[in-house]
Length: 167
Image (cartoon, rainbow, N blue to C red; front, side):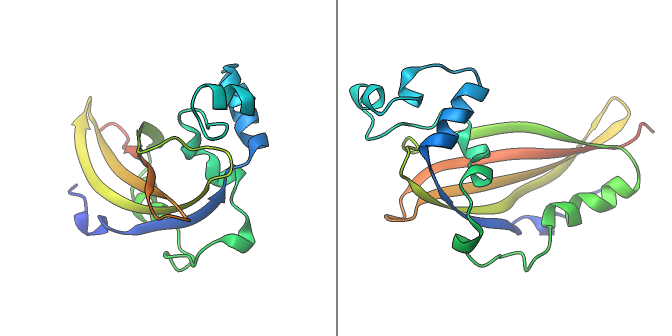
């Protein structure tokens, strides 16, 4: 089955997040990183940071920790769930959804006190045959920028994969 590449460019969300010390500390503990720079402002500043930095991969969860409903931008999806709209028809034929690869391109560290805006978009949609199944990849990219300056902070990409039942 050929994928409908017209979904490339579809917005999947817009976010406004506030980076707070407590969630950064909890996340560092959750990923078992006891480096003092993630827990102490003094240690972070001694290491050359303006404030406590967020550990790598934090951008993947920060919208759950620092997204306050009253601060959110208008929803570019119109209240729809584009990921479900794209993957739902594939799931109707059976199979499983998998969380695939993630990648992060940091333009500067995320630090406590940052206020960031995220803009998420489908950037690729393709399939591959693998061991008797079709693997369909939906790639979503979120551009996180500093809300004060508009400068990029991190570009986050992740794959949602549908694996069809074996033929």
